[in-house]
Image 1 (tube, rainbow, N blue to C red):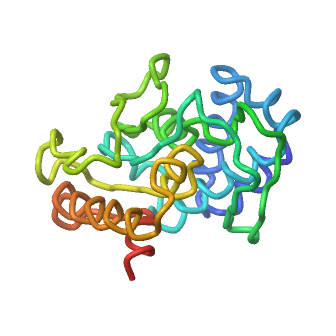
Image 2: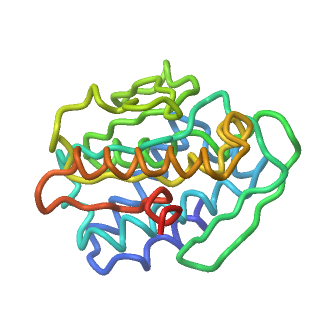
Length: 211
């Protein structure tokens, strides 16, 4: 835990941000047994480093997150199973994580949890189970057309999608690249519809896919 906090703190310059990120990591341990999961699956640390790095790249201060409604598309769930490997690009380098097959903590909704404890108003959507999560969440099949149409236009300050196209469930549902491309195009269309004027795309795998 201390090592993880020490790696995250240099991402920000203000001492208040150091305290905020340290308290967030402690909260993740208190509410979600982060320490036990780090011991069992060290790759969880890389996932959190990746998400923290994206926050540092897009927000000058962690206090800028206060009250902001942020959408995380394919946020992860408490039912996802592990593929053979998962690629993670963190602020500290690129890593390919391997694990035993079966349930994994790597696909839990860590980004929404972090946002919640940093004072933001996260909204997570995923096909898997999010029933026990304290942030606003919706069970959505992102492979269906207009799956995000129930959200009001221009209702989010920031949006991320980063885990759908690496999801083992999604890959099994759409084994053909052409079908995954259609889903990516729809997600990009929805991201543009849902983002407020001047809002932030924190990260979008969908946009990368259709380039």
